[in-house]
Length: 136
Length: 163
Image 1: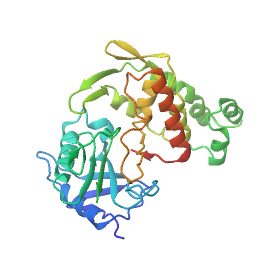
Image 2: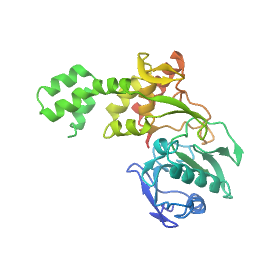
Image 3: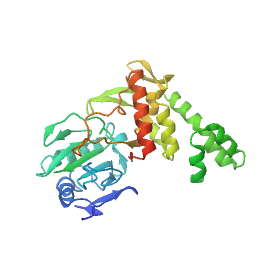
Image 4: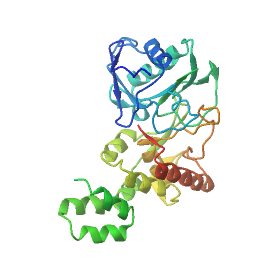
């Protein structure tokens, strides 16, 4: 099982101490698909914070299946705090979610900007404070 | 200064126990422990406003950044339990929604959800659509009670993630 790299497309992948970073290759490919340092102009995406990968979850959770990841901070700012008030944080979050919609193995894409499953609008509670991405 | 883990567990949020412990400790710990109930009062006194936010399609607390500052270093298990335990507190806070004071429990919920989150799961492994722990600032008394119960259960089971 591969591990989440420390850098993807120049973006630092920071992980909470509790994170088990063993994830499926298709999930890593999904992150590679949707993040890069220059994904929003102006500004530079320097880092994302992984608050959860295959940890703190039990089967059959997609996290426990190593097929889901949660992103809760952008360049060190909590999405929960920055998204409503910081245009850069909002632009990055929106771009990550929009880009993930173009990934062929996408499954769930829940966050402040979009709530979609299999590319279709999906009603789900929470997720104004982080992005949950999962793959098939 | 961190409290010894074993003592923290024993004391939990029981103030009586904390008081006994404090008598034998230095002033810095007295300040830390005695500030626990005061923290809820601090939340109660915040002059925040919930505004409709078109980007999030939800009501957003306009004092998130200030709240974040207040929450620094307050994310251990006892802090989380204290906040969750307060969610059904109906005392009016200084913060408002549509010109009306919201219960202090809403501000406690606001604080808690700037620290942690929970993803309920269906039998297929996907994220569940609904969970009673997630509420809006105009939540009913019943919704507040259900939210409190849901969060306490998650915190006690250690099933949450820190933001």
